[in-house]
Length: 319
Image (cartoon, rainbow, N blue to C red; front, side):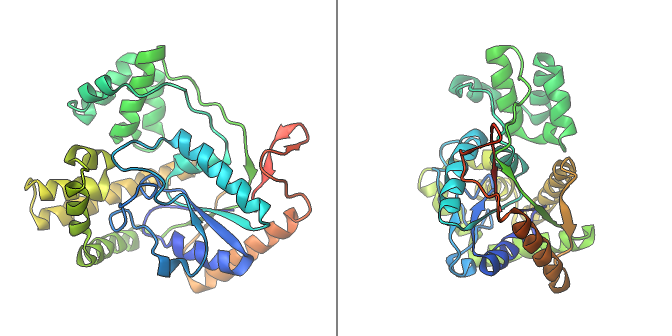
């Protein structure tokens, strides 16, 4: 099963409760929680919060290097297979839509290696100039990124798309080969509540030492440029440490940036029409519990190990 939705909606807490109830193990689908040391800034779940439930795909990569969504899909698929072999329930939890798509839908990404020289050149471009460059190289890709929920503001996606288009002429359509059949549970609040939770979360993390975490990461070799690439909290923390903004400016700018991110997440998840959406509450937890129970019961007799052929297709049921 998949627990998804915008940031600051309590997905990790729900995943742990569901895992405890149904014997699950959790696969994190978060594009920054894969990195070692990015804890407070990424909202990474703590050992105490895990309540003994195994979690995977956390701290699997060096933050100095880019961990691609393609690699995540392949690595997480192996993890899901191991969970199924233990007769446990794999629960994918996160707000990174592309990571979820890579694992569940088996989306295959172009095999184009990173071009360090080109990336260095593109790092000097403004986000708008990156988008315009992509338009000049591949109008179709530029349009798709824009329609995918504000992707024209995502520097990482723009640079990667330019890199691919430069190498092979255009970004090819993504090919998918579904790995799993899954039930999707989406969590979301109203706009006012989300914005309040974003601000409270920023203040809480700052009290817990988020700035000190960023300072330590930089001292250990994580350059400010890379922190800006990682985005959101780490980009703004870098600006604060560089003296480019004040603490009050940091809080307001980061809150606005996260709010815009939430809107992009919502747009991304709208593409998947079968998500069952709930507002987090005790009453709705019982409803979610019933949905999960019904799904598990319906699939109990046809669960297949990852990689096993089913009716001629490489397809498995993820509970």
